[in-house]
Each structure stands twice: as structure tokens, then as C-alpha cells.
Amino acid sequence: MPERQQQFAIRVRDLVVGFGRQIVLDHLSLDVRRGEILGLVGASGGGKSVLMRTIIGLVPRRSGAIEVMGQEIGETSDRGTQGAAGKWGILFQQGALFSSLTVRQNVQFPLRENLVLSQELMDEIAIAKLEMVGLRAQDGDKYPSELSGGMTKRVALARALALDPPIVFLDEPTSGLDPIAAGDFDALIGTLQKTLGLTVFMVTHDLASLTTVCDRVAALADGKIVAIGPMRELLQSDHPWVRAYFHGKRSQMLQPQMR
Amino acid sequence: MNSEPLLLATPSGDALELRPQGPWIAANVSALEALSRSVGVDVDRSRAVTLDMSGISALDTLGAWILEKMSRKAALSGRSPEIVGVADHFSGLMDEVHQVNRHTPAPAVLPNPVLLRLNDLGKATIEAREDITVFLQMLGALFIAVMGVVRRPRTLRLTSLVYQLNRIGFQAIPIVILITFLIGAIIAQQGFFHFRRFGAESYTVDMVGILVLRELGVLIVAIMVAGRSGSAYTAELGSMKMREEIDALSTMGLDPVEILILPRVAALVIALPILAFIGSISALYGGGLVAQFYGGMAPAIYIARLHEAISIAHFEVGILKAPFMALVIGIVACSEGLRVKGSAESLGRQTTTSVVKSIFLVIVLDGLFAIFFASIGM
Image (cartoon, rainbow over all chains, first blue to last red; front, side, top):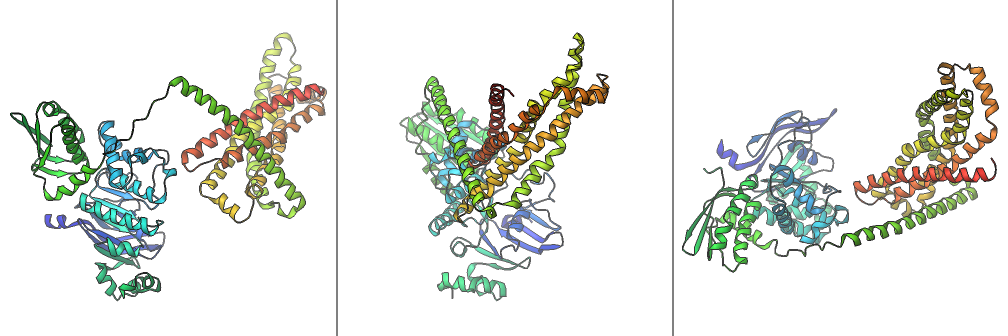
């Protein structure tokens, strides 16, 4: 038992999620190993974000079990996400920064709400986090509306990492970034993952991210994980959807070496 | 093992050896801050400082930073701190933390408070001028849009106009009736109560009639519309601005003033006189009910007195003001909406400004009209 806990950061078993008559996730099972970067791919509207939001307790589930860091995650209730602080950090697709707070206050927010520490230390930690994600201390005084897309993502990452959670969830971290910024962001995730020993659960469509930073890739189709493994193995997969995804015209055009 | 973080300080001659123990993580931050403060004096006193990290069981950015800060503090006063015994899986983090917070930004210079006040005053003055410019610009843009519609009547957004009329006119009728009814009743009650003392009860009807028709009916309704519909306009246009919908319209070669603002302002200009009329009648009815049940005046007498007391001129004075007030409310609400910047806070601020400003302007306008009508003898 303890061995298994050591090995897996997230274990999902027979998860069923649906809205009304529509079943989005159908008896889905997924293991995320500790300290790995797992990329999740799937069709748009196919339930990737739903899976992520179910694990973090934002979407109620019909049945199934979810275990994070060896701890069972209970059914969602009104206050179901309480006590989640410090367990995981989440980078939302649009950043979800609080628009009435400065960048520095945004990063300090989880610290202020969950810990008792002096303002001086809080300022230093906030600046340290900002510098770790590649921003400058001066950027701390800006408001979210003054940031570019790439900076917003970096600030959101700094906020997600504020409490040094063991797991971070990234929802399409490179969407809306130019290839250079996206590449930098991938590198940043890789570096932080090594320094902080993070487990990263990344929903993405970016083939470059999948090849460069992800240790393993999981493919979600028809409400199930149809293939999981290193990128090499997924390219060999003969599941029709996975083949279409990685060997479609667009993928071939972008990644001719994959052939 | 250790669930509480510790910091063991062993002085040996001039040297000081610090041995942090246990989990140095964010959850224990209060204890860590206290620990790092407690050894401050010892660090100051000794010449060489060694930080032995082999006892640390868990470390995160926060803990690493506190350690780094201690070593930096030691380095600052000329001692060379030495960090030893860093476990392999912590070395990356320690290196990373070693890089950060190197460039402390220049502390913000606090300006003279008197100058700050003067600065604010100057800014407010310039902003007030800007407000007038924005108001006139919007008035001009509306005029151009109206001219465009006059030239090509088909460009009038009829669906939008009817929709807005329903929303701000028709749906506002119940609340307008309720509030003006109460106001009329209260004025009549006060009139009977105070006029009774010198036997002038019958003049209550004159007071209610003139006050309601000339001033209160339209003013109360205008204030309600500013709060109810003006704020909605500002919030709608503001969120459209935030989501770049207005920019999208402009890039399609369409005029946002013609499509979004003209139907809204036109709906207000049409609806407000109607609402003011309904409100005035409702207030007179409220006054009549009070006259019957509180003042003991039969309805027939109330109506007869009303006939004597008021003329069509009183009604005209009131109702003529309504479209102008509507125009002011509409222009302020729409131009404030277009001034919304990216944040949610800005949307709230602009909505508040819109309501406050339009109510203020409505009352100022009412005062100007009072002067105007007095001088032409109406």
C-alpha cells in the first residue's frame, strides 16, 4: 500500500461524469505517476477539461473514485473544494487572475489566505516566485489588464505555485502564445518541474509541448483513456482516433520527422 | 521523524554553525520566521557562519528562501556564509532561490501630501473638462446617427428600439406606479396635516397638483430610470467593450453609436415622458386617496379642486422636461459604458459614476428649466 502511494500522484478509477443525458466520461481510469509531466490530449469538447475539473472537485461525478497523493477525494459538495489549498495549484486557460489585484497581490493571495506570515516575507516570496517564472520584480505592480498573454500565463503559474503544491494542473498552458513564447513556457514548466519536484497534469493540444516536455501522453476519446505512454508509443498506437490525431495532415505537416 | 522545524545554533569560537532540522515548508512558516529571527543576534556576533542542511527532511521555496535570506544577511555584513550538506534533491531549488530577489526595486518615493492633494485637485479639474468633452462628443455622434437615420430611415434598428422600449419602458411601469403613488400620498398627508392648523386644507390639492405635475412626477421618474436603466446601459456597453464586441462592430464598418447607442437613447427619450405621465397620474391618484380617507375630502371635490388649481401649462412644464432628462441619462450612461477598461472593478466604478452623474445632471437640468420657465412666465 505505501509503495503504491509513493508511486502515484493521482489515481482515477471508473470515473463517470455526465450532464443531463450526455455521458462525458465513461468509466475512465487513469494513473499519474509522481514527478512526471503527463500530457492529456483529446478532441475539443471531448471531456479533457471536464476530467481536470472533476479531479479538482469543480464538477460533480456520478460514480468512481479519485485519489490524489494517496488521499481519497470526496464527492463534491458546496464547499467541496475547501481544504484543497496547498494540495494542488491550477493554471486556468485564461489565467483567471483577480483583476482588481496587482500581480504581486495575486501571487500573495494564497499565502495570505492560508498562512500566517509577515508582509515583508510575503513580498519576498511573491517576488521570488515571479522571478522563478521569468518575470521581473517591477512587473509585480502591474494589473492583470496590463499584461500580455504570455505574462498572464506566467503570473497565473506563479500564483498556482505560491504554496508549493506537489501537483499542478495546467489547462492548455500554451494556447494563445506565439511559438517562441510557447517554447519558453514549455522549458519553464520543465525547469520548475525538476527544481520543485512537481507532478504536472497538462491538458494541451500543442504537439510541440507533447514531444518536448511531456514524459507520458494520455489520449482521451469516447470518454475513456484509449492510449497512454511516452510519445513514441502513442505514435505507434493503432487506435483510429489516436492515429488521426498524430498522423493527420496537420500533424504531418508540422512534424515531418514523426513519420 | 521530525514534524516540527528546528534550528540548532552551535557557536564554536568565532564561528557559528546553524543546523536547520525537520520540514522547512510553507505550512510551518510562522515557526520558521520566528526561528530565523531568533538566531539573528548570534549571526551578527560571529565571524563565520556555516549552514548545515543535512538535517532537513522537507524543503519548499518558502523554506529555501528563509535559509537563503539568513545566508544573505550574513554575507551582507562581510562574513562569508557557507552552505553545506545540501541533499541532491534540494540542490536545484537552493540554486534557483539563490538567483532570485537580487534586484530590489527602488523604493517608491512618497510625495509631499500637500502636493498630492493639489495634484488630485488638478486631475479632477482636467477630468471634469474631459467629461464635458465626452458628453458633447456623444451628443454630436448621436446627432450624426439621427441624421443618418433621417436620410435613410431603413437604417433605424427598429427591433432593437422596440426591445429596449419594452425593457426600460413597459417593464418599468409597475415600479414607477408604486413609487409615485406613495410619493403622492405622502405629500397629500403632509399637506393636510400642516395646512389643517390654519384651516387651509383645501389648498393641499393645489400643492399636490402643482408639485406633482411641474416637478416631482418627472423628477422622481427620471431618477428611477437613471438608477434602473442607465446603470443597465453602462454595464451592458461596458462588458461589450471589455469583450471587444464594440471593436468588432467598428471593424465590420458599422457605427456602434448607430447600432447600440441610438436605439437605447431613443428608447429612453420615448419612454421617459410616458413614464412621467403615468407616474404623475398615479401620484395624483395617491393624493386623492389620502384626501378621501385622511383629509375627509370627497373624490368629486378633490377632482373639482384639481380642475381649478392646475392648468395645462403645469402639465406641459413637467412633461416637456422629460425628453431632455432622458437624453442626459442616455448620453451619460452610454459614454460611461464606453469608458470601461479591462477589469471587473472598472466596470463597477463606471456604473456607479454613470448613476451618480446622471442623477446629478437631471437635478441640475431641472433647476435650469425652473429658471427658464419662470422667466417666460409659465
